[in-house]
Length: 402
Image (cartoon, rainbow, N blue to C red):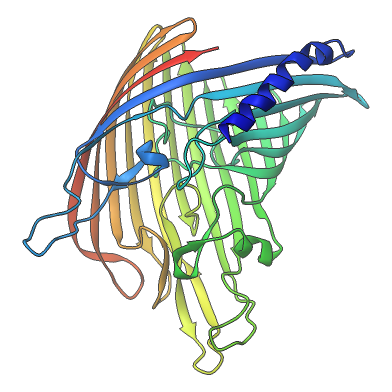
């Protein structure tokens, strides 16, 4: 796949000279070469060869009483090297047109080192209104985002996800209003047997629905957002009966940012229901099962997660990040639990970083300490009788940015 990408790139670049001569078109290539070296004191729940850290794994005790997951690890990772292109095109009926395509080499959780599409969308804008179609950051993520060297940008406290979407926005000096319809692609919802599939959302015939409003005043921004998702985990029961039962989830979010001179303070709080496809915890439970047909009814699990990020500086830039997640369980009694982290009661993390920034270069050092509390879910999916495990992570990153 790398060879195919390089061949395609060599074919594309020479032709850019021809494209640039088209009237009213302009092109800008950009990218980065990034290398990360990181150490973990413990085995972790993670993805992409450990580059995207989530939280430490629970205890796995062997016959002699030793914890198998109490093993440290060290890795060098460079697959977040990126290449992208921004395009400005001719006006369309008075609307300004643009597009973005961005690739990296991250692959997926099981097949690393292959070309992956990060962003691919077009955008129309006019008089404060804009319309975007294609894949980019999930709208719940990108109003206020934490600033970290870690590639997880604060997950599982911060939602982290790119999705195909139709996104509408109006913005003036004081107000930003957004609405979007979102589909699933590279990461999908969890379903029966803790298996991810885009079919659960596709079969529901309802895309994820999003709306938000932000207010800007001076150096400050505050906003709220709401997200609704309805998935259909199964179309057929184990007994062979048709089922159309859904899991409905409403996720609410509040965020704020203050930025003046070299100081940036950002914060976000989310109450999510079955939002486990955004590199965070969540899922659903079964409330009842028909003994004859096997048809199941569901209710979402609720997860509360918040974070605070304070950054200061320019050439030398440092800061701290703190995050907290709490499993609130379900509103009804449940039997089966499906999702991510259903045996985790809470997670807390704190990190500190320092970066040195030069034209075309960035060097960073970050320390992260994360603790997770594991236990046994009760009748409502709340986790009891907990014990804690912790991980120390030290990360060094070097980026050449062009």
